[in-house]
Length: 451
Image 1: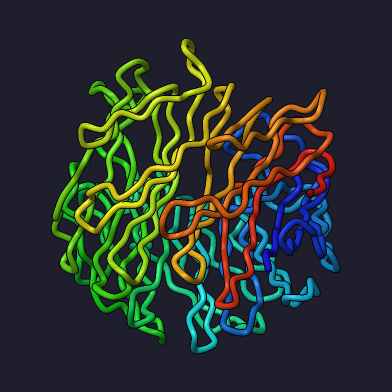
Image 2: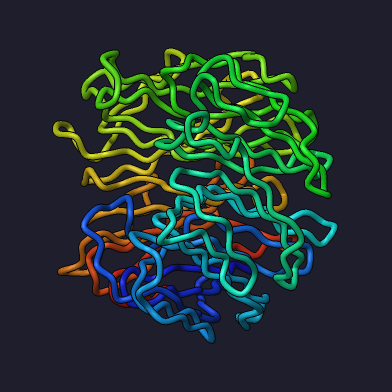
């Protein structure tokens, strides 16, 4: 049984459930705000499930009046962007909703342990006129700089504790924003909050950074900081996503160096780190035809020594000497979205290609399912094909959401699209539960339906 969750751009967020090819329920949330940049559009950014089958979503929303199923909050709050933290049970009934406001908050992750705790991480940007507020829970004293925030709730939405990463003095905390930070659980169910910091930042009263880079802050269930470890990685490389192998607590991360920020050329990488966060291996993914035409979009480690990654690339990419081509085109920069299974040393086991006819084709999120299956969602325009199976968009549609499920041997189990009459529709993030239910979150511009 599959359950699909989607967030609607501009008008409302929709949460769908899918059972094979039938969609069971839909819930909503969002605003009437129009965003001018793709990075700030309303969308479900992160999702997770707890052992009882409840689903939690952390979404970007605007500052106009916010509607989410049974939740409503009037507009005119904060500036730029707010966060919406919601929970529904497996039948689609809303359990609670929290609105986080300030001057422009950015989500970093949501995870659930088996002991009744939910963690959310976010960049809590705020000011004296727009203090950081978690509505109905707490208001934070006003600062004028970014604060990385880790919050623990119980599964009923009660706030247990809140922790800031960094010092209170602006002079020691400046320059920490700009890249994503991430939240994951290890094999002992301890939260790891990975943040980016410059040189000389006081992350704790006893720890000040000696180099810029990404730092793994590990907490116990009571919110006590256990350790801070810098990931052994060139400071010009930006981590864009990560996962922890819960059997070994090794960390796997992917990211890039963007030529728009650095004088050095673009560099796409996949890397592994040991428990002390020393680098074990690092490999590049190269597009020999188009500079900047390649990106990693997801990594997941299973319990059997395997890694799953998703790659989007304009027409072609090369990984460890193997070249993958888009079979649907012979020229141009139409993307091929690819799922790959690797061992924990980065060696390839299989490749599954999803060829497209547009530069918008590709994956945006993936998750592990029971029985070592992998699910991934993304976006396509016009056509996308996997083997002999092809999805074709309806006439007049723009970007369409699609998802796929692949088993441990690389065979495709599901390959479906979702139709909407708006232009910008996608699946941005995936989550699953122990029963094999699949939730897919993203955005739609107008409406959407499955099948």
